[in-house]
Length: 228
View 1 (tube, rainbow, N blue to C red):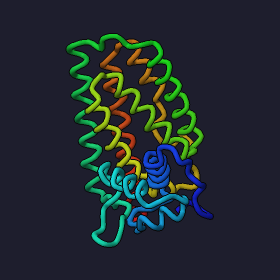
View 2 (view 1 turned 30 degrees about the vertical axis):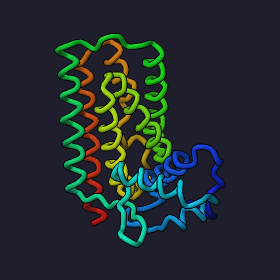
View 3 (view 1 turned 120 degrees about the vertical axis):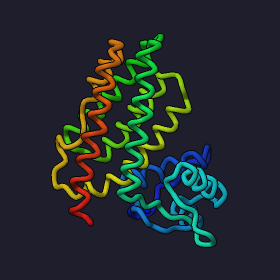
């Protein structure tokens, strides 16, 4: 739970607001893997009724971030090293297939406003990675990849990749926090990837996304034994 209790949540769109707040707690590791809690506990923390809390928790369970415990409440999902490897494999497979399709059929129109927004996300994510500010990096990185995938025009691929990346972050964060200094540790070539997409250079884009996957997987697998 947020230290000192959660801030009151505004009464509009409670379900989504609570889901967003808890998703952030899970992704940054403030709600750690294996943490148990009840609907009442969350409702009391945020000062809201049980119904939107239950709906928000069910939404997060559907995203694979929480697990439902029969008659007990919910638990932050524990991901294993095997889960991490299969998630990164799935991510790499889908991204490679998407870029291969684009290289064969062309990227089509790339709206300038969408490119500008993705570039802003890329710059923010790169700055956070280079500075080693993990909480900021997680949010910026997820938004960057979400917007970049959405430019491909297939919402199902975008949604799948967003879910997989969120789950890999949940596994990765505790290992990353074991390092005293994260400056320059995480992948930070977000801007170069935007440049490649804007230039319609699918070969460079594929190389960069492969490097992202290789870098992330090698880094976390190197850190994981130290915590086992």
